[in-house]
Amino acid sequence: HKRVAILISGGGSNMLALLDSMTGDHRGRPCLVLSNDAKAGGLAKAAARGVATAVVDHRPFGQNRSAFEAELMKPLREAGTDIVCLAGFMRVLTDGFVSQLQGRMLNIHPSLLPKYKGLHTHRRALEAGDAEHGCTVHEVTARLDDGPILGQARVPILPEDTPEGLAARVLVQEHRLYPAVLRRFAAGDRRPLMLD
Ligand code: GAR
Image (tube, rainbow, N blue to C red; front, side, top):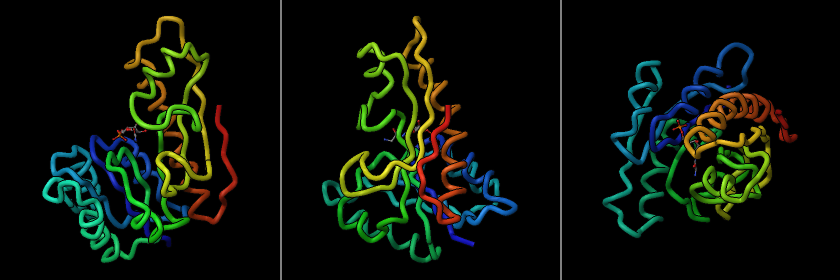
């Protein structure tokens, strides 16, 4: 099996969807859930499923991103990681870290990339008057929220939508999309998966 590490910063609902998908003929198995925040709610949920967890707090490193990333790499190496899934991991990663995991790291972003890189994607889609929104899984490269697209799921925007309501409907699609893309990726299939 490919050993899959999942990086989180928060509640970890995407992480749980990924963990629960890695059974049967799936070519991946979870090896580690790693967070930059000891308070991330996802850590206890991963531990309750018997998955190893680790925390590397970014705060003691201040602006020194590469020192933080060197510490982040240690548990990933020790776990024998083949594939890294960023799942609500809210730290920007430098070129140095990304290049060590070139072609082996995925991210989920709550917009139809290349639209709305960065934060507040739901509010920005509403303010733009878009008819649809969604989420994207992509390979991570040194450029933020960039890199080859591995899958997208679309969500219609409703007339009275709020950022919160829209985010909740996108999140449901994230939980479909990310496991489906990881399943294919772990089997060596990088063709984009487009879900409605
Ligand atoms: C998800 O909506 C994910 O797409 C987003 O954070 C949320 C995490 O939720 N990621 C980003 O904004 C990355 N910049 P979760 O912890 O419940 O999976």
